[in-house]
Image (cartoon, rainbow, N blue to C red; front, top):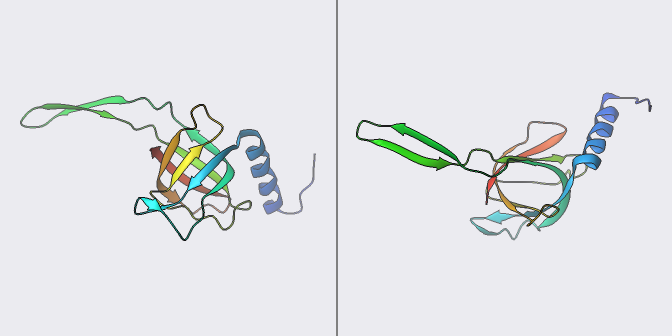
Length: 128
């Protein structure tokens, strides 16, 4: 078992091991106003992608005038990007992610981005 001189070295080793085991190739398609962003070049990275089954759940309720029902897709997903491996990466809501290693190479849309972690850039995803 390796001995680490700092917590940062230990953390980097754990993240790298996690990415080797669970990471997958994804294409990042950078958009601005729904079209390709000329200031950011699309790229392929390896990151941990966690996504739900993609099925819809019925959601219903009542209002004063009538009952209502709508399909609600609430599963979503998240992309966990190693900041040490991609320090210059900037994701924004509206960008798209393509899971290249999954059957059918599904697309996801970035709904929000959490930049508070020192270790990971976390993009919350929805269906594209």
